[in-house]
Every structure is written in structure tokens, then in C-alpha cells.
Image (cartoon, rainbow, N blue to C red; front, side, top):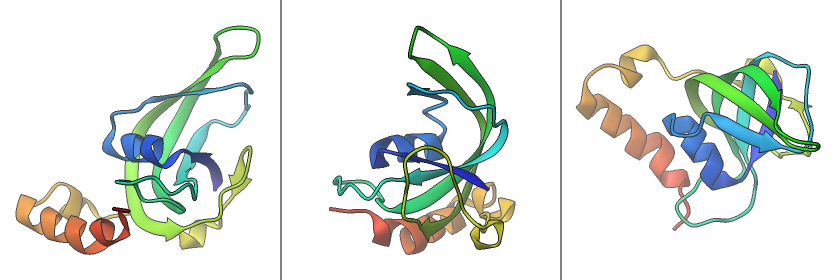
Length: 126
């Protein structure tokens, strides 16, 4: 799967669905699934160095001479996957990506909280 590295805080915002636009100085012809990875930059309150979510890259819109708006939809959380980010788009083997089941995401809130605190919380930098 094609992957893109973002600053760790931005990757968490994509995971939560808060961030649906990413600005880049370059465009891509790729459309479809895109794995969002947090860079290894150690930022308190983030999960650096991990892939966190798959989005659908639906459009890339020119916003100036060197500005492009990448439009994301449909964020699908995955089990955090250690990834060494790279510049530009790079490939991550699909077999390594494990989606979080809908039963956990959309089921009982207590089950989700237990999941969050056992899977994601230990990876968050203080």
C-alpha cells in the first residue's frame, strides 16, 4: 500500500477524523487507499514512528504555484505498526496492515476504552 509520513500530531488528527486535508508542495496521481504514518519525531502526546490509519485519497487540488491540497476521506484505524517513514510516497506491505474490527470501533464504549488503553496508550509519548 502507498504510505505517507506526517508529523505525529497531524497523523493523530487524521486518525481521529479531525484532519481531512494535507498540504504538500507536490502532487501525486495516486488515488485510493493511503496509509498514514507518524514520523519518528518525538513529540509529547503522540505516537511517533508508527502507521496509524488508512484513508481514501480522493483528490489533489492545486492551490498555488507550489501548493497542493490532498483530500482524505474514510479514515480506517489500524493496529499501530512500527514504520520507518520516508519522504514522498513509499510502499508498505499490505500483509502488515491489520484493521481494527468494527466491533471494537463501533461496539460497546467500555470495550473500546479497554482497547485504546491497552493498544494505543502505551505508545503515546509523555
